[in-house]
Length: 347
Ligand code: HSE
Image 1 (cartoon, helix red, strand yellow):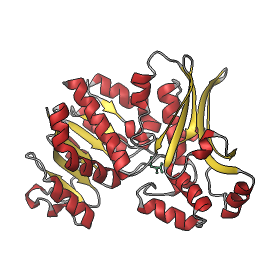
Image 2: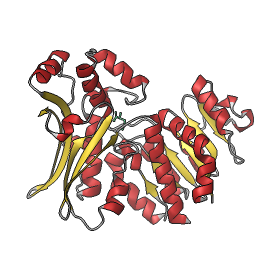
Image 3: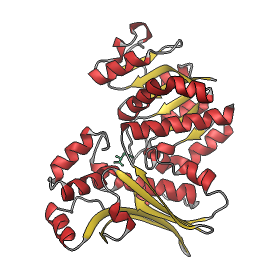
Image 4: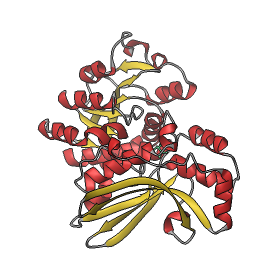
């Protein structure tokens, strides 16, 4: 089955997804009958294209890797200046829109409006964008249901490490009492680098940015707002909460110095930024805070940009998953996972 795909926001994640598609197109078609044609890209910085016959993926990747404007890919597909992303979403001949613009956790925009436009104009949506999910999940899910379109977001938490699909399939029949874990790759990478390579905070952050882990504005990582968005999404999806990011004040890692990391290490301990949400008699309690953990704690062994999440389940008890939490290919894989899930559902 051939899917016509439009990409809105073609930064780190979009590039990762296209790299995977380039590498795996033949296998995906042979093994599952999945074929993708990229019919549109809308990017505020790189430019926008609509190409009903499909863009050449290698040429698109070359332009993205070289930092060229997307007009270099197919001059005939270029749209007039001033076309908004929402207009492109509405007009493009896509079956599925990938909403991959940078997260804005305060407003959820422009991503939320992109998703609404895509659903209203009959497209399925895959997103990795945490803003619209943390702020408008219920509304967007209802809109998708009304429009009979699929709306998936595996990459919003723990990149390609399965969280939502794991609960949907593997944990079927369990009630979830709570979740807790390390939910931000950038801060875990920085804390790990400060301890193991003894680099300072600035150097570690620069590496996290270079490796594509950090948000466009890394303050969201450092101050705990990215982990908070994920906690809110998990609480609302799994615990039936109706939390908003503004309900919770997160703690980040800005106050943790290299000396503090060294002192903790000398005492067999390690700092980690931990997010949690759990059912209580008074509703759902949730938060994000830095913790000094003994090395014997399973979370203390999660290093680099890896994340971990423990589910407290009524039938299975605690189940912990550990895997990549951020990254170009790791999050691109989450997009592919969702596309293949849509394919299985529509087939
Ligand atoms: N900036 C995020 C992180 C990206 O570091 O975890 C993945 O959501």
